[in-house]
Amino acid sequence: MANKGKNILAFFEEHPVFTIQEVREFLELPDESTKASKIISQHKMNGRIGVVKEGVYYTVRPGQTPSSTQADPFLLAAKLAPDSVLAFHSAFELLGFSHSLFNSYYFFSQRPRPAFKHRDSHFRCVLTPEKLQKKSAHEFGTEKVERIGVKVLVTGKERTLVEVLERPQYCGGLEEVYRCLEKMPYIQPSTIFEYLDLREEKNLYARVGFFLEQHRDQFHIEEAVLQALERNIPAKAVYWIRQEKGGVLQDRWNLIVPQAALNRTWEEL
Image (spheres, helix red, strand yellow):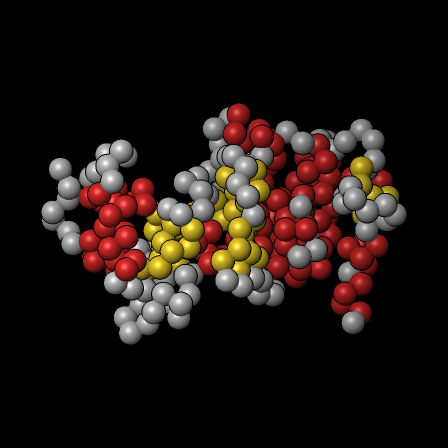
């Protein structure tokens, strides 16, 4: 039986961006029902909602039209997959640590999803790391952040730290990574270790170890923390950024570090 306790217009008010599945759940409709599609078509025709893509919609603000209403890109990224977790630079922006504003938005999902563009916003799905999927830990190190009245699942600061050091290309490069991370007031090393243990990748210990040694004063990192990271580094030297050759070997971490990160050359500009 459809939910008669709440009007569908109230649902639109509470959901600036939503999926057809959420409409079905609100109305308590089975998946095979066509009623949700008919309701959406009706309100699309009267200009009450706009279409992002098939199955994903946004509420048109009072006094505006579908073309003049901009769907919030963070809420949209959260709806592009049922298991979406906003990550990388998008996480920095939601957590309040970003240095620059991007029009690219990143999210994790446990299966591949094509890149998507809506107006001037670009959306990139990154596969949830394999070890997290195997261990059913895809939500480890996440938190819910409020975005215009809606809770959005996002990687927390410790997990984000590890992941942007692993894939700086999803954060605009090492300069943006450093400038964002250096805005963090504190971190919990224990959470970082938990996440690294889940991932089981020695090169991540090396990247994190080098970065935390560089920032040991800022984050009050004790030598014991660095030694614990050092015990798990690769046996052979690895490049921080695999696609880039060159750099300087940091013996303690068996990590070949780009000159820019070693000397923070962007600070000279």
